[in-house]
Image (tube, rainbow over the protein chains, first blue to last red):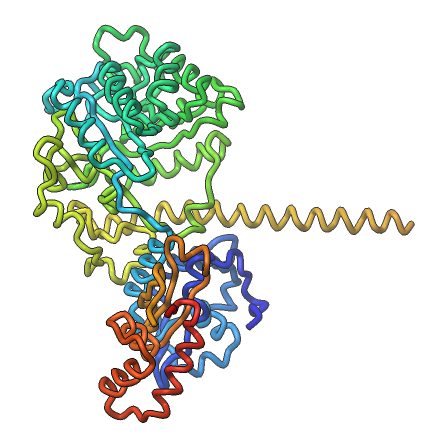
Length: 479
Length: 88
């Protein structure tokens, strides 16, 4: 069926999902219809944007066209006589009343994962060579943790553990985390050297404060540790940065040093993500920081950089979660400012593609965290309830069973419009703030959708301009 | 007859779908949609019914009100639809 002229189909949807689902099959006789739970609608430029969070299809229409569709009513099947309604039904915006959409989502996700041909081999490691750090950030999630480096025994056991789980293709990815990993470069050397001598190919990324990554260490990170991506945090401009990071005396002029080190890292072609940690006291400061970054780094350097803001404090239970609503709004605005300034290109990919995996806890078979004491965790936040053994004694089968248990959608999430782009809360035992989570998903999606809409609108305008140009050049030739 | 390696059937929105994984994806990268009868036949083959007669017999056992002519017709439709997923 052709698309009704009242609807503009901005994006057809994720081709993988669309081809799996095909057109929706006809409803059973006398079955009522309703709007899909997976519709998120946004009023924009006096029009409605309808986004299907499962198929990722985006429609744009005038309010009058679709007035009947906006409420949460139930419709008799006669409504399908209307060509717009019939089209919306074919494309899953209207569904039979008893349709189990959350089940369909899980089935689609399972099929997509199956087609990805994922192996169940261990290929991703988050390693904490130390919990020690040369900064004393007031917000550090490791506050209160004992500072310790990996012992010789733990280093050996880490190497053995990785070699014992060697994937068939021999390639692994390591995320160096801490503490500050660059405080113990020799431990990183040891692990990398031993693995590579044993025929393991590796590439790595690092979360660091950047203070020790001078020209020499940046080179070593690139060449010896195979670091191709690094995340460095800036909490504000010089004065605020120093106040918040509270470096111990060995780091002189920390802000200037870190900025200079970011230049070194970029020179080594190490992609650098600058994370701006926000709380209610430094948001204004972070806007200045964004302006500074824009000035300080060349266009070429900025191509290798990503700048983004995140709230500082996790919501209850989740060690890598979100902050409070007001702060999240402010962070959202700041991220918008970063994109508007062209520092970080916004990727429409997040909106257009259905995600099949989320944080590391959703694919525990493929990765693990090894902390400085050799304990194994399924989450980089390292909460006790996601610990499942240690490198010396191995994986505890009972704890492992709990972590890898089959995905099940929790009751609260079954009717949530954002379910297909969320972790469905199944394996993360800590996420329980359902209402907050909904609001956060909506905030992020709203921003992303506005951006996606302007992306497609700009593309349309560009097409029109090119057509116009062609018409006028043809007219010139005729004259 | 048996199901070729790498062909997997999964439920989807009240019906069933067969997709390929691994090496089989090089041979066939599409998908085969099936109804409940097709899924039943698929599972019967997986369980070891390796001839038309055996599959037919398990169909007749499972569905009391099914007549043999319809069952044979369903089976032929299945073989036609799923031929790329089957081997001797």
